Each structure stands twice: as C-alpha cells, then as structure tokens.
Image (cartoon, rainbow, N blue to C red; front, side, top):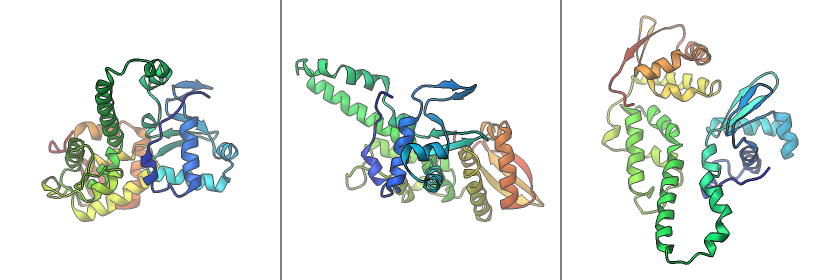
Length: 289
C-alpha cells in the first residue's frame, strides 16, 4: 500500500492514548481503510471503510482476540468508528477519516516539494499567509467533525435549543481561533463544551423525567445503530396516558421514519426505557436546522 495519512498532535490528548493497544488498533484501521470506494464480491466498501473481522485484525496487529473485541467496543463508544456486521464479515467505518487522509492537493504538494524548494523566496510571505489560512480552515474543519459530540453534551445538559447552542459554540471559538480565555490553543473540544455557559444556554429542552429516560434510550441506540445521533435532533415533549409526544423538525422525523432498520432499533429501545408507549409527533419550528 502506498500513500500517507495525517496524524495530529491532538491525539496526545485522546482519552485512550495511554493504552498502546488502542492507539495501535486505531492507526491500523486508518491505514487499512479504503482511500477510494470500491466493490468486493458485490459489496460496496466506501472511502474510509474497511472490510475485516476480529480474527483478521488480531492476526494483522498481533493483539489478542479478546483485546481486539474490547478495543473495538471502546472505539465505538467514543465515536471513532462504527461497525456494521454480517454473518461473514464486518464493515468498519472511520468516522473522522477525512481528517486523517491526505487530500489530492496535499499529495500534489508532496510530489512537487523538490521543485518548490528550488524556487526563489520572493513569495515566501504570501505562501506563509496562505498556509496560516489553510491551517485555520483545517482546524475549523477538524473540530466541526466533533459537532455531534458537542451537541450530545448540550442536549443532555437540557439546554433549550441544543442545536442552536452548538452552532453558537462553534461560531464563537472559530472566531477566536480556537483559543481559550488565556490565549492557549484548545485541543479537547468536549471538555470546553462541558463548561460552556452563556445566554444561549438558558431554558430547558424537555421535562427532566423524560430526558432521563431518553438518555437511557440513547445509550441503547448508540450500541445498536450507527445512526444514533439522529435522536439528538428530536426530543420528548410529554408523556400522558401512554402517549409519548415527540417534537422535532419534519425532515428529522422523516429521516428516522424512512429508515426501517433505525425504526426497529428505536422501537425496541423505547420499550426498554419508557415501557409500552404510543408515539405521536409534533412539529417544532423553533428547533434550528
């Protein structure tokens, strides 16, 4: 295999960084993932995905089968990967693949590096400014990939409009170049989000008793479908006489209802967390797109 991947120093702050097996497996998965979509025996393996199994990963990395199983579950729990399994194999998706993979421009830049080194330095300042802008845009793009991780924090803090709060959070820190109040670079977005508190966080999203059960339901969904973040875009409004009223935008409700696999998993999770209830929808125009 040829080519290269990008590895940011932010990995040093990853919660599993001190676990060498976790780091080894994550990097191995990134290196093995398709850099372009291709079909294998009638199955489409997309860019950023790989077709594999626990035994294969154990053989390729030298990590025990039991440890592979544990590491994969941890990577799923922190949204690094999703896994779709069949009776023959598993398709693993690297959730942030684009932040690790070299772009075409970067590949061309590497190929032309010798020519660049031989050019005059008259345009050095212009190039530096352009690079600074590219770094800023790249950082914004990298952090934006954590949007749903931040949204999850604000959702279960029960802020009135968690999507709007999340957008306000990202807009603020993009505006200050991802610096904290002391002027230091922010590396862990989620830890900053935990302490985010201003006028955008006023009010509540849904009744607390319903939110507690929704969180239980969300945990079940997280372990059973890669589309669990869809349920951060709708919310429980009330539960009366066995009827659970769900509020959300039409497109978000429709997205869930149109996916039979997600719908089946959701119904099971609802029963496990709320008991036997009937669902009614209520459109909410106040929820930000």
